[in-house]
Length: 266
Image (cartoon, rainbow, N blue to C red; front, side, top):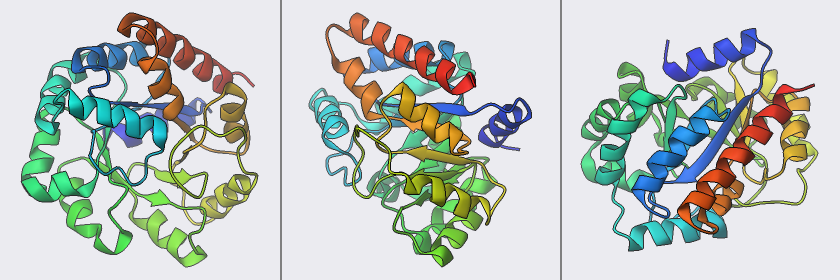
């Protein structure tokens, strides 16, 4: 069993919803990223999603795009991110999911890339620009190496496509709550509830909901609709970027703790 599947099984036994925070590697710097990972781990994060800064982040909204731009300007590269993770992951209870676009994988070659992930202690992978029809090139070798490649279900996906993605996705299923890019929204669309039910009828895999969740009440709503995980990105990235690095770290720790408490308390 993979680390991510095991984490979801443990949470399910306790009737507990997972919290998955997202931050961008290298913003404001990799040293702060390493500290943020440890702080999130100690403040309720069940799994942590770490974004690799990329020059053309098609799925990312303005907050995460800006963070990626700052990280790239500071010289953050995939190799330095993996080197940092290699020293941090042994200290973490929460499995790490790497969020990256496909071009860096293609550039290195799938086998070499996956070997680097294993060496860095990474448990999962989200590649938003890898379509289902071409995903086996990554899904098959990743499964052999114990890395979960989680696929995204869009709100516009057909029933047939939802079933196909649900069959192929590893670790859990990532339901995108909005049509468009990541970012903070004032409210969560009610059709997410219907989509959760639809996916639940096709699979027994865990379902995480992300994109647009930025407040405690929204996280509670997603949990109440039946999600197995709440994924929060831009709200964490924004907090980490505000003020001094220490102020940002304090802010994300407090926010993580409040989110986890909210989705744990009935």
